[in-house]
Image (cartoon, rainbow, N blue to C red; front, top):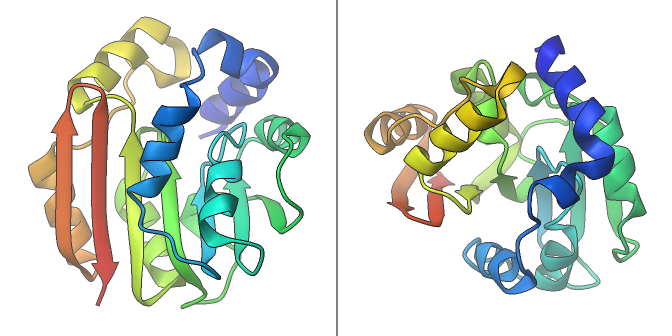
Amino acid sequence: MESRKDFFDQHAPAWDEHHHLAAEAELGGIVKSFGLSEGDSVLDVGTGTGVLLPFIQKGIGPEGRVVAMDFAFQMLKEAKRRTVPQHKILVNASVEAIPFRSNVFDQISCFSSFPHFPNKGRALLEMVRVLKPGGYLSIAHLKSTEELRQLHHQVGGAVAHDGLPSPEVLRDMMSRCELTGVTIINQPGKFLARGQKG
């Protein structure tokens, strides 16, 4: 865990430049697939440099609330520099011990971060714990599982072996964490796993 944290802290200042920040249309499309509503409270887990924050805020409107959480402090510093509306909170914490009470958020987004969680089962349990009954968890990427595996192998270092579970395994993991109606899209240029807390 510490090696991953060091990796992201060291790369934070140049992260967007070196990792080819996606076009706004692609990021907006990802957030649109979350099905946000006006006034929603959203936890953006593994927010990184906060690339989704402006789009999430637009989706939930001025009455909504977004909490951006990441375990790498330098990533959060980059996220803070982004021009986003005022209703945001930045939290430096691990997904395996989310510092919020249960049943708080209407939506949880997890964009481009799930492969880096060492204990994915524990991470899922924690995200579902803080989700309100009826709320949705969305795990998303702008790459397929195979594309992500190849990318992380090329990057090397602490993330060389980080990857997504197969769609079948992830569906089973999500179902065992009390998520219902789980749907998974895994295709070139897109991965989306989404489930509702029963």
